[in-house]
Amino acid sequence: MKYAQKMLEEVGIEGDRLKMYNIGASDAPLFAQAANEMTERAREFGPNPLKKGKR
Amino acid sequence: MIVGERKPFAEITELIKDSKKVLILGCGTCVSVCMAGGMKEVSILASQLRMDSGIQDKGMEFGEDTIQRQCDREYIEPIIELAKSHDVVVSMACGAGVQLLSDMLVPTPVLPAVNTSFIGICEEEGTWLERCRGCGNCLLGETGGICPVARCAKNLFNGPCGGSVNGICEVSPNTPCAWQLVYDRLKALDKLETLEEIQPIRDWSPSSNGIPRGVFREDMAGIGKESESASE
Image (cartoon, rainbow over all chains, first blue to last red; front, side):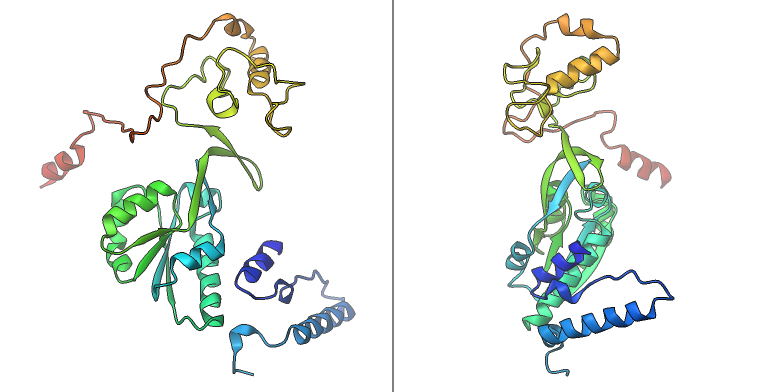
């Protein structure tokens, strides 16, 4: 994961846009929490620089 | 194997900045095993370059391919047309592969994406260590399989220097003294008496002296052409 994040950072994309969670199938609340975290983080970073003009 | 390391991304983008259509070409042998320039690394580099091109509106195109060996002509021949349909080829092979590819693809330029490090081994996951300098005059039979050329900072041939302390080389606290290793190995092999033989002054003539070396075998010369004519 760290390696993939570094590869993204090299091209100017925030590495923290990518994260891996290990969540059991029965852990719906954890899944929701992770989804909220990722959504919040994506909002902080703003639009994906690769998708200019495609909002 | 030949161990290499991928060049920094910024260096690669600088090398190809004037090109529009780029072929990333991996090598399926040494650099594939040390995870520097095989099929997977070709995909990663091509993905990065596509993202970089997209973000910066460079409008570049990237092709991907990996051949078994870039240091043998017969593996390069099938991809010559593909390579020449690009502005430039980025080779992820060692320096030998880059050079042969470059010879065979003129006038298409070939650029390196990997720094060739050394001949070595994989010690453990993520760690590769140098083990051979290709000196052309192998002494491993007398040293229990530990090379004093590649592993002794002073290339000593008759025991350690005064800088060997508790089995560690004075040059680096992370490097074991090669001659401590030789002693331990010969002891384990019950061949310590080998150390009593004084190694004569070494003949360095087979080693690199600035002129590119070659191996020439008369028994192999023209063997490909002979079998071709026999089958005709």
